[in-house]
Amino acid sequence: MKLKDLLDNIDYKCISGDISADVNDLIYDSRKVVCGCAFFCISGAVTNGHMYAEDAVKKGASVIIAEEPLKLAGDVTQILVKSSRAALAHMSAIFFGNPAKRVKLVGITGTKGKTSVSYMIKDIIDRSGHACGLIGTVGAFWKDNKVKTGLTTPESYVIHSLLRQMADDGCDYVVMEVSSQAIMLDRTAGIEFDIAIFMNFSPDHIGKGEHSSLEEYRKCKQRLFKQAKIGIFNADDEVCDLFVRQSACEKNYLFGSYGETDLHVENIKQWSSKGVLGVSYRLSGIIDAEVVLEIPGRFNVYNSMASIFACCLLGIDTDTILKALKHVRIPGRVELIPVSDMFSVIVDYAHNEVSTRSVLETLREYNPPHIICVYGAGGNRSRLRRYDMGEVTGELADFSVLTCDNPRDEEISDINEDIKAGLAKHNGKYIEIEDRVEAIAYAIEHAAEGDIILLLGKGHEDYMEIKGVKYPYSEREAVIKAYELVKGRR
Image 1 (cartoon, rainbow, N blue to C red):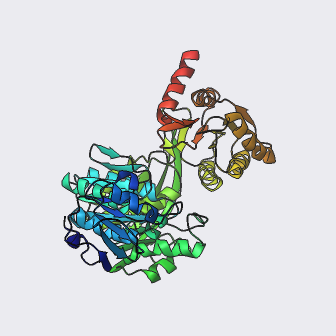
Image 2: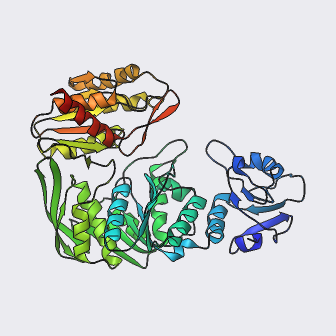
């Protein structure tokens, strides 16, 4: 494309070269520069892209997009912008033909619940007969396609590339997890969402390389509702009013259990049957219905309500919504692995104190005879996190099986020593079995009727990282293998 077309509606200054230059790709990683591309000098938390501009020119970049004037050899075109990240977002949209305008786009933000809501909405839309794409923590999915992205919300160039592929492949809808960091870094700049959903807000992602304060974290999330046509808000969250007041949406809707809401929930019941844990509830307002989920937890009431509301506004019929939700499964999020009617095996991505406490408190509400936790902790990461996980499992679980979970460059036994220090605070009982499949097998072998086996940490991950090597690993496959091992020993 011509550079001048890519710069449409961007505030810029050309300080050298010609804006009629041809551009064959947009690159923001100097290692991937190709001849004839535009290279974006992006200032990151670790390095400054302006340092690599000269190298990019030597590799053949014909255009440099920068935030400060650079002394560069040759006749390269140099464009100055206020924000290279914002420029990348706007230019990527044009480069890929504004694909966000070709689909109905739903964005979800919140400290918790984004992944679950995105999967629920996608399942409902797919069941309705339309094709839906998903961009989120687990990657990007549509039809039979799966793309690893590495980030909850990928870089803007990747977003628009994926939206283009999804639209070209016949997707009518796309649902996207929108992280606060993505908003802060302008990855979604310029995108207009048809619907934006606010789930909840609590302290998280504050520190070096993330947000400087709780207020900044909140304000970043609020920005999503300045680029959406319709806003859907969880009225039961204590900061909901702040989000609604700052919304620039044409229409704002509320769901919850308190006060006057557009979608109201009552009569929440948690149930269990033959190893399955679920929840049911009554809805009134925009639709009247009895909802049954075969996944546990009150938090999934809110996740499903947000999904129902969005899909109703998208015109999907109630019967389709209810049937899809009854059988929905979210990879690695309180995911039931059905191996026995006698006890439940749950896989969850929880790998810190907050998320571990949340899932354990949720499962405690089902009054199981025992909760057996199988988990480890990541190597080359905070030792305090290990202690905290040990402390909360010592408090809320009946028994822990300490095992392997991405030990990286550390020894598993050393990691477990930190976990045991936390367990000791509540005299938590435990055993150590380094092989994770054998650890799961031990839990299955010792589970009594009605018990819950909770596998923490791995969730949806498809690898185990040991001494610099990522070995293929699936928690679901490990459960099935462990169950077969136990059957073979009996």
